[in-house]
Length: 93
Image (cartoon, rainbow, N blue to C red):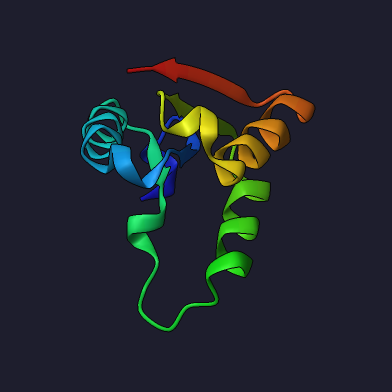
């Protein structure tokens, strides 16, 4: 029920931080935000296309910054999209 959600959130993180990302996603969901992160991609999905669509349509881009994520080109690109569009919400772990 999208109407009950506060914001549509795109969660960016490094694969090595999947457990911390799940914990953050659970917290955001518990606070009534709609959270999209790549664990929601179904088998056979066009990975890059789906990520791009979700990134462009999110109201907030939450980036989980860790030692691993600062080295990830994917996370850096997603963070840049959030920054450039005024939707970046940085979080540290």
